[in-house]
Length: 420
Ligand SMILES: [Zn+2]
Image (cartoon, rainbow, N blue to C red; front, side, top):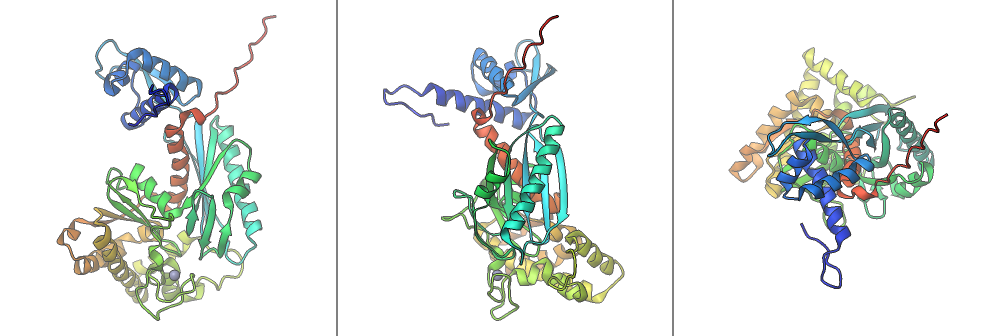
């Protein structure tokens, strides 16, 4: 931990206090509810300091007191301090054919989950943003009704994101270019909310790293399995962003020069081989993306139809899914050669069809990855479904709360009831 030092050489007391508040919250998040004495023993902070920190965290409603903690800390047991279910956040994922909204609280409970069909491509961006704001408002109201104070919203978008400016620089499959989504949502949502935007694969990777099937694996790559395919790369427990924050646009890596036209305008991109639109075009050509009249079918329904055909022994479906697996392994070998991950977590539709896709993918990976330890990199199917990025979006706000606890306002005191 580094602590700011003021001009006279003394540590900035406020900075120390902030760092210790975060340290206390992190300790409870990692280890579960703990008594004040147990927190002091584990963090090395003085007991009276911990008591004062916990008092502030209680005032800000970031923690709550439970029953007695007998977890073995020295001294007599005290009341357990747990992360609060009264503080929450929203993640909202904007994808080609759906809008997914997830709300969770600081205690880790899912408070809200909603996924609706949503078509962005070809529509006026302003109208789309109105709909997105409306979906966020509904989720915020739902949290408030359940006694959860929402602190912020993160939008998850499949594309190049300038996180600092809060701008979607380019989302090829949505047809978005330079969309100032954070500014726009800030004007449409209630004041004092923290609003951010990030790439969908980055947020899903963070969700997986925190609580998914590969939780605790510090070197993992998450692949989205939507119409587009993006990667969230976590190495040494940290998300890789790159110089401009555009790391992970793996779906647009050329694997077949002169191949099919991609949503980005180029040809032969990886997602023209392993994206959901490519699979649907082969297995159910009558229902291919772009042919819809009326509302877009839910991606889960499209995948269910492919699974039904596989179960019925449909050869076209079997060949198509095996090809997806082979192309997936081929592209993943490049990722493995570059990053040496321990796990590649498959999201979206790739997870839903994992049992059919992984064998071919693992075989292609074993052939193509140069280092033999590639055999120690395995594909695993995410269990977070199509809402992983939205879940990661809510998690990003809650992580921010843990890192900057004093940004959470102290609620006004409850007025005393006059005695009659
Ligand atoms: Zn492309």
